[in-house]
Amino acid sequence: MKVLVAVKRVIDYNVKVRVKPDNTGVDLSNVKMAMNPFCEIAVEEAVRLKEKGVATEIVAVTIGPKVSQEQLRTALALGADRAIQVETDEDVQSLDAAKMLKAVVDKEEPNLVIMGKQSIDTDNNQTGQMLAQLAGMPQGTFASEVEVEGEKVKVTREIDGGLMTVSLKLPAVVTTDLRLNEPRYASLPNIMKAKKKPLETVSPADLGIDVTPRLKTLKVEEPQPRQPGIKVESVEELVDKLKNEAKVI
Amino acid sequence: MSTLVIADHNKGELTGSTLSVIAAAKAIGGDIDVLVAGKDIGGVAEQAAKADGVNKVLTADNDAYGHDLAENLSLLIAEVGKGYSHLLASAGTVGKDTMPRVAAMLDVAQVSDIIGVQSEDTFVRPIYAGNAIATVQSSDSVKVITVRTTSFDPVAAEGGSASVESVDSAHDAGLSEFVSEELAESDRPDLAAADVVISGGRGMQNGENFKMLESVADVLGAAIGASRAAVDAGFVPNDMQVGQTGKIVAPNLYIAVGISGAIQHLAGMGDSKVIVAINKDEDAPIFQVADYGLVADLFEAVPQLEEELKKVV
Ligand SMILES: Cc1cc2nc3c(=O)[nH]c(=O)nc-3n(C[C@H](O)[C@H](O)[C@H](O)COP(=O)(O)OP(=O)(O)OC[C@H]3O[C@@H](n4cnc5c(N)ncnc54)[C@H](O)[C@@H]3O)c2cc1C
Ligand SMILES: Cc1cc2nc3c(=O)[nH]c(=O)nc-3n(C[C@H](O)[C@H](O)[C@H](O)COP(=O)(O)OP(=O)(O)OC[C@H]3O[C@@H](n4cnc5c(N)ncnc54)[C@H](O)[C@@H]3O)c2cc1C
Image (cartoon, rainbow over all chains, first blue to last red; front, side, top):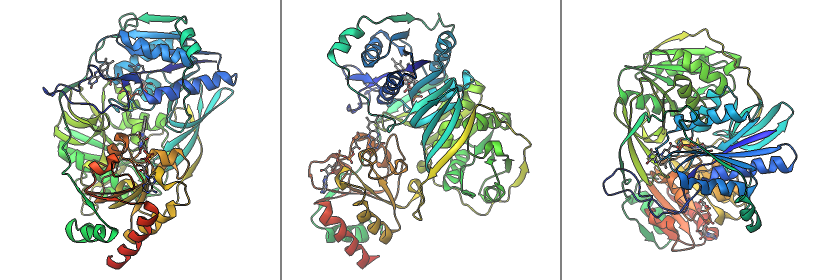
């Protein structure tokens, strides 16, 4: 079966962002960018399905500016067979990202779409669910285990109360949680090979999507800083402060 | 203007998070109705009807909604939600799972995880693991929103007297089926709503050692949390993870034990009123946000903490 994985270029998770002085956004110039960690997990899961003989082809897709081809090359180095870039310099909001992915789904007709549960920049946690709705597919969000069984996929989900397992009709959308797998690193030979794998570029217009932001960011600010705290010397002092100064016990 | 709040419930009880979502709805203004969907939810509906500020409670009692399957619930919410200007749910796993489907069905954007309301169309939300706070304005006719419940003080659970009406609607999309669930059994307060939380990290070394935290939690009536590293290592289950990609908590007192304080962890507990850190590394970043930091070996400090607390609480 064919698996589509959506990968997003985001700020590296180790970078602490700075808000721009004019409060229009965060400063992304000269910061390290990387594949969204949840998307790495998505690629890894697809590759494992291929290694198990369940998946036959893995197509990686991203929506973003030209440089986001870097993340597609990473996906190819990790084991995707080919890649599609929807190239745009616009700020693509989740609903539009989902519509573009839907157009790619219509064309590629994958049996399974695997994506991250959230991207660590906007933390929206929406795109997979929106795509599932638009494509008329069921969804297995926050997945910690994925098992393809014939025409169905069994997904164990990390929910507030613990774990929940659902069975979904294929084609379906799965969004990854942290415990699904531990992504591998790309080997040098695979990075070299990835350079020769096919990467197709399309525009939102080719897909018939007009990018129209519905949400306007009015301003972006620094969070309120916490008052600096103190170091205590002993457990006795700690308990005394909690009782008599902070009055929280 | 009117808001439909999607109730969260657990084991036949309305959860406190719903009261916080109602508070967010009040901040938006207009009439507030509450939708309770599930199986055997009469008790939940009665509780919702007593919540302060609720106009009407709508119930959809049907097998199709019994396990919160997003494919079915989203169809219900889109149908019942017709005519409302705002559809609100908590940013728990049910809201996160379901509301984007509703938004896509209505062809509108969703505003996720709001922490503030500035006006009927303008909301405040954290981005980049809480390192930046964005104010966003929605131009859509219907606003689909999930609410970070720790940012809104719950409305009173008693005092209201809303009417209860059942809606006759059974949507089964036929796409998904419930198989099983493994729910954490605990007599402790709900992590996301607890007054006191004590969390352990990789420094705890194994799951067995979390018993030390349990003993402290028993004294304080606290919930127990964990860092991602502790969950990944299998010390404790996933529902205990606090952080950007786990649960968001904002208790009066948060005690971090053997946790370094990565930005992803801070994103989940940085709004706690008082933060205590116990860590043997005096340079651990957690000390930068801690009100009270204790540089110590946790295996000595935690049993002492239990003893000292027993003397005063
Ligand atoms: C260059 C650029 C700059 C942007 N700047 C801003 C900004 O300053 N402010 C702002 O509010 N928004 C900005 N956006 C838009 C914002 O990132 C969108 O909200 C985003 O594309 C949708 O993802 P999400 O965070 O909602 O994803 P989520 O729903 O959290 O992501 C879940 C998953 O969806 C998939 N996915 C999401 N987006 C893509 C994508 N583009 N390509 C492939 N897969 C994807 C991934 O698998 C991801 O793990 C920008 C977007 C781009 C491309
Ligand atoms: C996409 C993504 C999402 C993430 N989401 C989350 C999230 O939601 N929540 C989260 O917590 N993390 C999250 N993380 C992980 C995060 O980056 C850190 O790796 C994690 O929080 C570290 O956990 P820790 O502090 O327990 O472990 P470490 O960083 O290993 O820290 C252990 C600490 O214990 C101390 N210690 C060790 N032994 C003792 C002792 N005997 N006595 C006292 N102190 C001791 C050490 O000094 C150290 O500071 C995420 C990461 C990624 C990439």
